[in-house]
Length: 144
Image 1: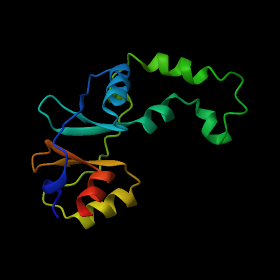
Image 2: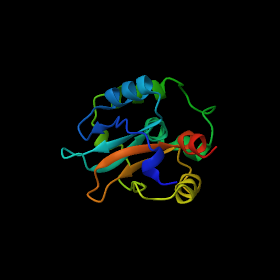
Image 3: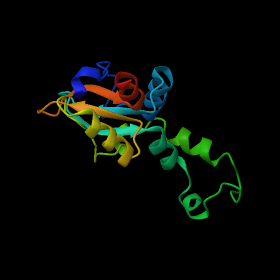
Image 4: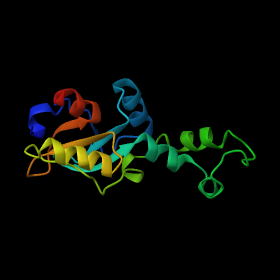
């Protein structure tokens, strides 16, 4: 089965100048854990995920400690997210986007999702325009 046969055509996405507050709101409202980032012409230029935002908000030394138990104040995460709220998504997005094409086969898509530990993957046409999104559950549902 090809991507075009089971991809979602709901193109919930954000533009480069969307704020982090807008991104978080859209993620919460849509139930999506990541969003494609598009330029003014609808070309996929990045992806922003919950994981990217949490990682950006964590104090740098937290990853070295592998635990929040040594933090002097647990409000640091809240403060950092509030500081980030008005910043554009372009500051925090990943531009090394993994994507599939409409004619890619389900086995290839499944392999890509698992190998890269993705919950969803954008589908782009030959010009790089976003044409759909495939979530892991979309793949499973359409193959059963």
